[in-house]
Structure formats: C-alpha cells, structure tokens
Image 1 (cartoon, rainbow, N blue to C red):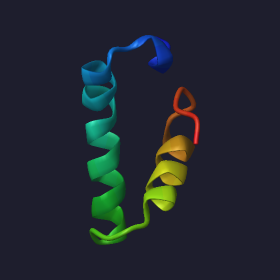
Image 2: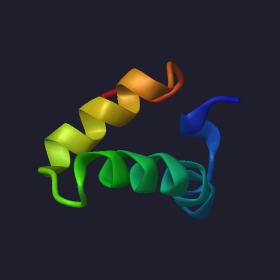
Image 3: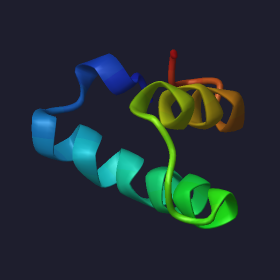
Length: 48
C-alpha cells in the first residue's frame, strides 16, 4: 500500500493508531516534528 495514494480520510485512518502510540509512549506531549520522526521510524511506508 502506498500512503500517497490514500484519500485524506484514508491517511487519517492509517495514521491515527501510530500517532496515539507515539504520544502514549512519550507521556502525551511532543512537538509535531518529533511525532512525525517517531512515526517514520515505526513504519517504513511513512516518510518523515
């Protein structure tokens, strides 16, 4: 699956679980750039 081919709603649905996981692991507060970097590290299909 290519993330770039998903609709806006599809991208949101795909990213919501990784975002929540990253925030939970960090204690709930991160900068946007840090969230993006951590998610990119978790999933090779997501670029930072």
